[in-house]
Length: 325
Image (cartoon, rainbow, N blue to C red):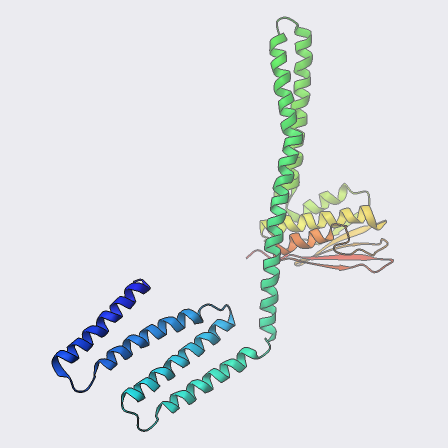
């Protein structure tokens, strides 16, 4: 029922009650109670609609005020329509005032530790969701660019080479053979480009052998000697495992590029992964070393990053990852 229809129905009911009183009874004006009921419903709808507009805890305070105000107004109207006398609405006024005062004091009270944690958690989730979406868009653009500049360009070249070879196959077999050899080389290079793009999205060793062996395989290709000890927790969610792998990869890359270290280590300890080195230290998140990117990637899967890197070293990067639920 629309608001206009509701108003029309209320007017019709009030008019019908007044007409019935004027035609049949006269005397005591009982239609006042019809008006009272209609106005009470209208006031309730209006006040509840207003009270539902605020967000969070303020909404409950507004609902409390609306309900208390409506009850007091109903009692006052009932007392007045009944002819006055003993002012009994004061008990409702005292009760609703006490309840609202208590609610208001609770509302103004500083949030407790648990509520502060929840507020911080919501803020972290909001920020990580936005960062994850931005990272996903950037990743899709990177994959598109890599495919366009790499595999797609090679496939176009392959198609042209095969077309020319087909045209020359009878007239100039030697040139056609050379073009076919070039086409074969181009096809192999295109496959390599595709593999590189696939590895950047999800390394096959991670899917085949798990996080521990994937990190060990990664450590073998680095210029700095890296020891890997312990095993990651199991089971891990796929997204958390991928985030942890790329976080370790970025941390080890920073060791090679920036630390000047002669050795490094990766330690799996429960839900924590520690990447340490004996380099010069001074690593900071957001300092251009990619550590900010690690933190953003981990936040998207409910993970955390902690960096201890005093000047002069050593550096210790702790990655905490969630278990699969």
